[in-house]
Image (tube, rainbow, N blue to C red; front, top):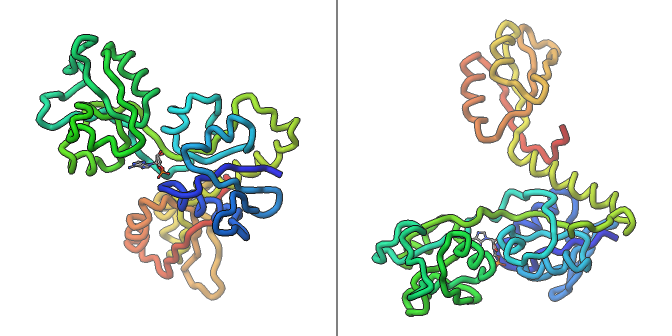
Length: 292
Ligand code: AMP
């Protein structure tokens, strides 16, 4: 059995469940409060808070886990990232009141006399950051909603997570520096001997399955019928993985069918370019998995 610690609720829970389901590892038969559930085959999920995933993985209770890189960094436990899961994007930033006149870390008083007070739920990262920046600050640990601390007079600076920056703005705060860029990661304990524990094969399988889904998410499969005499120009538009597949159409006249894998982000441009070459029957589909 390969046991994977997954976030049971919060921002990362749903995207994690969706990713695993897309990889064929759907949560099966989980009761309302059940801590564990089968993911099919030799995979089992252990549902815990995102904040606790690193601990369970570092302790060896789980073979692997999914959580935010910010939480991994704050935990200071010996785990390694196996895969960036490409969701849960956010940044850990230093923010100050808009009316504070602080625009950069260099604007902060150096301390230790009259040190700035910094509210954060990331005390370890925060201490390290300000110490490296040569600023002696008082760190005020809070368990969440650090952005209200300046209004309550608890602190004049905050270190908090943001993705759009809007919560900071609404609270009259200005970003002063980025400490860390984060996203959800698949992690495993440093130095864990998966081979000896008999989980090397399923762990490799898990990484390959998730990676193939992530790769496929950014691509589309495109099919179109194009005039044979336009093929050279079509090949420039459709590089595909190894160039487009070209096939004859029964009774297709001077039309041939082309198939190619194309980046999802530019698929509209690709269609317009093919249309300009008199392409017909353009079909675009999602790809479930892609293993180059
Ligand atoms: P949770 O507290 O369980 O909702 O999970 C919080 C985790 O979601 C954080 O540790 C980050 O890894 C991630 N996250 C992504 N975007 C944001 C955001 N804008 N604010 C807070 N956390 C975020």
